[in-house]
Each structure stands twice: as structure tokens, then as C-alpha cells.
Length: 217
Image 1 (tube, rainbow, N blue to C red):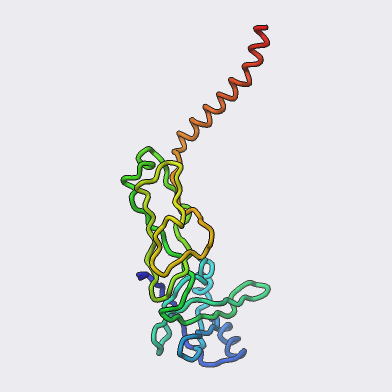
Image 2: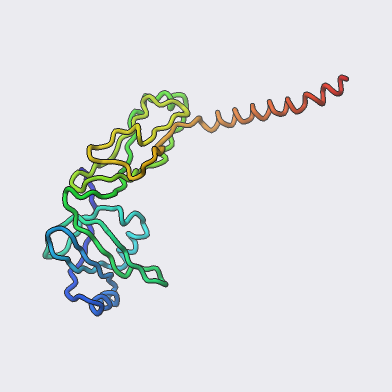
């Protein structure tokens, strides 16, 4: 299970309708609603500045939150919609959905690397590049993994690890159908530069050879 589910604190909104929503915005809040499950929809207000900061951090709509509202039990939610001002592009309303344990959701799961100490490619001076430090997976809300693991213990220089070679947690699958690269081991920059120089010298020798032949003739 995922160990760190961020808290999202909200206030219960006592009024409903456009008037209450406008008042919330005047008070520096963003109105929202929590729906789904076997409970009635709950109108809420979120602090505008905190919400804007989280939105700008990215992946807000693919992050699982533990919503805390005074007087109500904590509940896991995921954002389903953010309405924005047509001119200012600032949030004006947010919809959250309560999650059951069996609900399928898209989340970004961190990638953990093992086997670096014995990797033949790294021992030869190769450079490990983690192209995707996080991978978006379709998971069940009740069984969210902390991370996925990639093993580089047998990876050589020039090899890549793709999602198809990774053992995913039970019930999880990639959100992308194609077989994408997660990490690779490339040659060290010095080795690449030396190879480029040798290629350049070889091309230069080939270019000079006809001129030399003409001079001898």
C-alpha cells in the first residue's frame, strides 16, 4: 500500500447555490463538491492559495488525497474536474469523487532501482538515466503500491528497460498501451566523444586520400 497519501483539508460549505459560491470566492475560498459512494454529496470550500499551489505543482487530478473535513470521517478522494475562470484561468470550482476500495484510478507511481552495485554496464562506466522516475498506472484504490521496481543487475551499456519487462503489482497495469522506456544505460560521455573523434578522423583521412593520389600522379 502507498504509505504517503497527502491530506487535503477542507471546510464544509453551509450554503449551496450560486450565492454561497460567490461568497466563498469573496472570502478567499474555492467552492467544491465531494460526491460518490453511499453518502450524500458534501459541499466544501478549499483555501484558494493552497489549492492554486497544488494545481501549479502538477498532477493534481491523478493524485489520491485523504480529505479531512471537520465533523466528517476522513475519506479518500480524487479530483474529477477543476472549473476555471474563462479569462484569468484561476480555479472557480472543484469536484472530488469518493473512492471505494475496488475503484480503478490512474496514479503516478514512483520507480525504484535495484542492482546498481552489480550492473555490468555501470561497472564498465556506463551512465544510468531514469527517463521516467514515475510511471502512470491504473490501480485499485484499495491496493496502491508504494513503488515499482526495475532491476539493472544484468543490464549492459546500450540496453534499456521498458515497461513490459517490469513485474507490476497485482491488479495494476500501465495507462499507456505501447511499450515505453523507463530507464537505460548509455556509454560515458568521454567514451562517446572519443568515438565521435575517431569517426571524424576516419572521414578526414578518406577525404584527403584522393588529393594525395592526384599529387603522386
